[in-house]
Amino acid sequence: MSDVRKSSLQRLTPVVVSVVLLLAACSIFPSSPKQPIKFEVTAPTANAQVNVGQSLGIQGLATADAISKVDVVIDNELYATLTAPDQTKGVSSFPVTVPWTPKAAGTHVVVMKAFGPDDKVIVSTDPLIITAKSLLPPTPAPQPTVPAPPTQAAQIPAQNPAATTVPAAAPTTAAAELTVVNEFARVRSGPDTGYTQLGQLSQNDKATVKGKSADGKWWQIVYKDGVGWVFGDLVKANDAAKTVPVASAPPLPTQAAAPAAPAPPSGNVLATLPTAPVVSAAPAPTTAPAAARAGGRGILTIDQNPVSAGGTVYASWNIPSFRDGSFDKGDGGGLKGPIAGSMRVEVPYVASQRTLTLQWNDTNGSAQSDTIVIAVTGSAPAGATTGGRGILRLEANPIGAGGTAYATWNIPSFREGSFDKGDGAGLKGPIAANMRVDISGVTNQRSLLLRWIDTNGAEQTDTIVLSVSGTAPAASADECNASNPYWRGRDPSYPFCVKTDLEWNDGGQSNPRNLNFNQDQQYTLKWNVFGINGITLHVDPNSQFGPAGNTGRSVPINGSSGSDNATYTFNGRDFGGGCYKWELYIVRKDGKEVGHNEKFMCVK
Image (cartoon, rainbow, N blue to C red; front, side, top):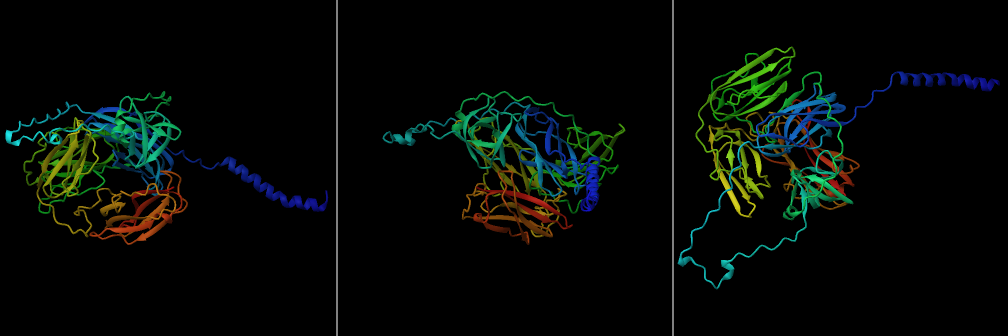
């Protein structure tokens, strides 16, 4: 062998040995595999049927590299937030178990969303459809009033036939069509969540309707080069769609057996149960005598004690050794369950002294309990809980000043309608035939109005006067604390005030979900968030409603005062093709940054 070749081989030998050792190390210590990104609902089953007032457990399992929290959204409203023991690191397997009791008959939609430590959605479940049935007989349809025969003087002359007859309605010629009213609607190959997903439609998208399912809950639409199915509660169909025939469904794909209920992760997973996206805190009395806010065991706590008659209390607990349990609100309903080891529960309409009881079995199987007596100040004046027509109802009347009222209705003959909360905003819709609506921050007497069109096309109404007991202490609109009606601190993640959530300046009428490329049009976002250290408006590429855009940006904002909205205006032609998400990033008083609200925009 030549000296030159030998020298070259000697120089290569350390390199070869290093490569061999590196490959060996990789085989001995393989890199940690990434967790599959998925979110499965394990209970209840799809299309489950329960009775109104029947408690059930919503369960699921999310897997990803780092899940910091899970939001449970029911009927498009946040119901519960569960957090990992260390939200900065998250967990790779996040089991969810949340108790829920339907309070209104009809179809309910549950969606669970898993978030990463950056507070962005990693994965969400398909909509879980649950049908709640009422145990009460339906309210009889109102009988039309027969007008008294007119007197001779009031008779209309015969020579005016247009005044004496009502012309027949012209037959509709509109095509059968629907519009997506939810944030999005998944399109499937059949009328059930067990069918394959073909794609999805965005809010305000329209589709031609071809047929409907046998139970009337799903619509068959024209989709791409064929047909697909969308769930009825996520869309609004026009009158022409109601005459389409029942379409036959393809065979349901064979489904794998549901996985066993997962074991809870190490550490406590905390559940926070807000009452509604806009929370108004009932004021604590300033002159009432002191009362205990924690039970004798220190486990069960309440946010205020005493409470003004008709007010609302929030009970919380964090049980360190927990297997199962139940809770009694002291309203005569007895112990209810199942409960989670860490929860926050609303106890509404406390009109007289109550005893709250928390019972649980620890991990050793021993029965434990804790109790608190809620004291009440003042007295609640009498008020009607049912409207004159017997359709519109209140769960309690009156309520404590600054509290939340809950209106319900079950309209037997219904085509469409709207509802006025008596807050000056007027009638809002569309509404469903069966609903339960939160009316928050009630400080003065209000007149509630329910308006609907029955199946015969006649307009109907029902009203209730909502009374208020006591007075809420005045709070400066600029001073952000728990007495401010815009306080969001009942959810620990949002200890600040929000007068206006992130929204389009025109109320969303020109929501830029489907902009044309290089479209010269101005759009304005507005918000009013105060009691914070800082705020930034982010726009990031997002693929939830289509291909993601190419670049994002962030806009430092000084925030807004308690009296004025902050705004940001942009032009659609400033963005390239693709979809984007606008979101507020808020720096709290403690320095932690949290995401709040989001809006979407797509440029095509």
